[in-house]
Image 1 (cartoon, rainbow, N blue to C red):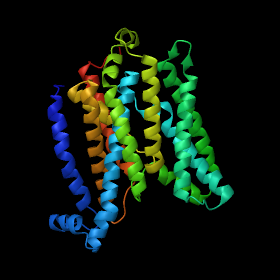
Image 2 (image 1 turned 135 degrees about the vertical axis):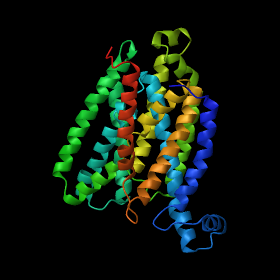
Image 3 (image 1 turned 30 degrees about the horizontal axis):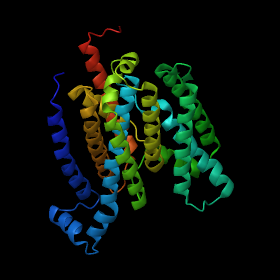
Image 4 (image 1 turned 60 degrees about the horizontal axis):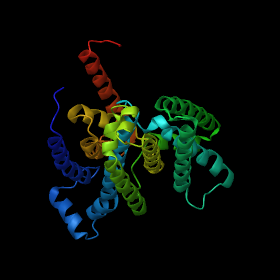
Length: 343
């Protein structure tokens, strides 16, 4: 595959994002014309159109941009750390731990206390966040050795912890009531509806900090692609880099999963495709992945809201339905490129 100049891709994504944002604001069960959209955003006269656009669609579109950008950037970081283009944040147990925490909050928490004073959504979000952080810490501790943290051991520990979390989650789902089981299933499918202003502010602050941190470590991630020993010879604190990046990825991904549920394939496919297009240089890979992730999730959420309007599909289902066949086609292309060899 012939690679593009990074600047071309960055500018192209930057120009496409406002168009996708306009489409997200206009689309829905009640479509808004360009004139109505502009008047609603500028005048805010209290009309039905202005209420729908400013109170529902605009926060949701901004939420989709933030979630997509964070997941894609986290995926790019994980693929750089693991030196594996098929890595994503779920490898360190974030998704499995979040599902376990959310299930515990719904089945055990609400079963014991009834109605949560924080609200059911906040209880589930806190449970998912705590579960994701705790499983990541457990994976990190299990992979510790005298020489540092082995990538292979971290991968194996992540698989084991995720499998255990999935087993406990399945047990909780088996014991749950029909109402709680349905709510767990809906949460696990991912959704961007009902976002609050404080959630956007919190996610934006952590997202900007995470993106600034990753850009500051872009050269170190580039050096790590050569191998850990080579990176050490170049002056990179490899263990410190792994520790800081994994904890940062765990924190922001846990927050995203707690607020939006599990949205798969964004952190896997987006950085993988961007790397194929412009190469592995993280100075360009990270911002391009953030823009592409924001664009992809914004389009996926617009499709989820409109394809079966006035009802809507969970956005995680849309990304999985679109992402799985696309990823399979990528694998087939790579197999054809290397002549079908397994070596």
